[in-house]
Length: 450
Image 1: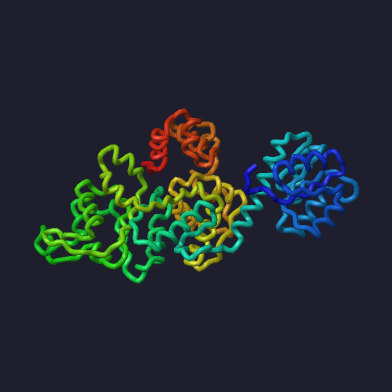
Image 2 (image 1 turned 45 degrees about the vertical axis):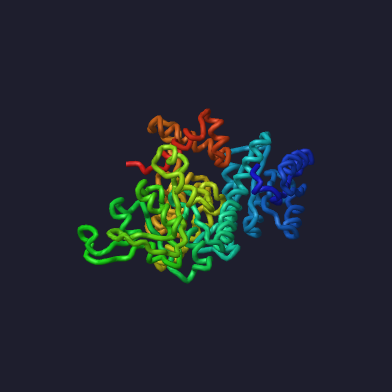
């Protein structure tokens, strides 16, 4: 049982003492707080006095039945979920229990594993609803769009606060779409340089033959089309911060020039022989393994050591837990406001899909999905059928009948990673491959399909 579900309060209602004892023992051993009641009236009196997260009730009991108890809970305690267990299972009974509001229906006898799985599924739904309704509270002075309360993001924010007060060069590492530029902006605007310019540069978007001119400027006549002298990004950022996004995309010759800027704090404009001092803090980012690029001879080791004075690793969205739900709510509110309409709600099933999806495109993918849903959905409730096809279950996909061998392999890798909570060393051991091979296969997962 996941630690996030420990200490939830569960009330067990059954008129059989042996059943109460067994259920209480099993659930208490998993860390839940458990309470018992021998009939529905006792359970209702208890609920009036003590908040409970989950009620597990028997179907047939003397006096008030389990079905009536379910309806009472549903109409009086909106923060409480309900499960039904019964020794007299029928299709009609199951249908009636669900109609009354039971999230799960278990027929006796059931195994401990079946009980715990049903409890987890039920508490999942309650937990998702609470997360998406709770106010977003930013802890610390560096929000800047970094929404999330997960332990992984708390570490990122803590590192940002400490690093912001230094003048050290910083390397920000993370998959595409994780929010590397937001982290860079957060560092700059919480630093002593906050009143000076923050200049972002996408190194991968500028042609190699123009990057030097863009970064360092050029003098008039230095090349065809240079009709006037123009300062580069480093001069523009003087006194402030320059952010070199995807620095791994720079050529080896450019890396030599960047190394000089880091060492000497000076730049030379294209077409000039004069070096000019600049006071610029450099923040760099990459979504690639620079150590691997060094081994391949396409990234300079000395530049790596220069930019890697301080490092911040941004976790992928799939490792951020409930942050997925907080971000989904944030983007839903944002895009609904832009359209001038109320924000739609998500069904419990849709929230579960969001929480369990791999998110290869990370926060950027989530934002795009939410925008599409808000624009295209007419209903005030977004359910699983409204989600993109790659997020929905497919019987053909589940059977593997319409997938290539590579797709099946990558899907298996994803399931293994999920089972070990993203631990790549453990995943590689389970898969029988080394970390380098696993990393290469994961890179295939990130590449967009044609």
